Length: 305
Image (cartoon, rainbow, N blue to C red; front, side):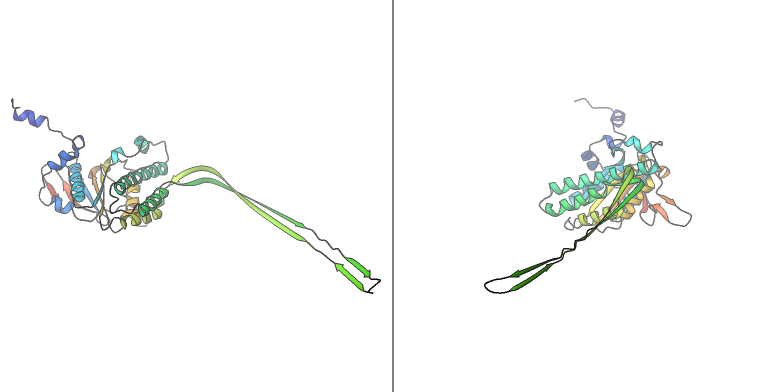
């Protein structure tokens, strides 16, 4: 059997983890320094590194490790989210419309992964309880508002009728003398009112963060002490203008839920996690406070900062 020269073998190695089967990534993972110890904790965390430094490789290994320990891992490649990812970068669309579409698509991916997990693990998941929890999440991401003018019509109608009937009947019996007097009087009044409200405008989908958070709490409670890991790869593929809004969804709806951990793989120079206002409040994730950033990968090492 002919052997290939060493340089030919290296040239055949894939340079991008997403082109390699997941099993191969798991079998070829080599822990460097404190990398896996840092990544394996349950804190919400951002994993920084330039392209080709092993972020996808590390998240794939983490997902497999958690699943082998009977946890639930949802690994999402944000480049593949949505049926029409090009709309996110379409500047002709309003920002709120693009951001809402992104949030709905990400939550839909999580919903689909959890549905598949619940169906595949019915031995410990009560499907009669999991179904309504998944339905609640679906409702939170498919609510519709009508943006436009509101027209109200009010109509009142009053009808009054009055009847005064008075009759007197006198009866005299010949065999048994008697006198019968009878008097009848009647009155009828009626009144009615009605109000109609019409909305004229365009229908817009929106995401209810409170309802979504409540749905995640319900689902976390159904996992029978199993921890849920949501792993978001290729964060920097999301347009920079939309990243803080996706971060805000995570911070408000998922970060506060006990039993769920979020890990994000991103390129530091191409990531924007928050929009801060002059008053000090912000939209998105505050790096270091809401999610730690103590892992930075380079081509030769994994550094904990």
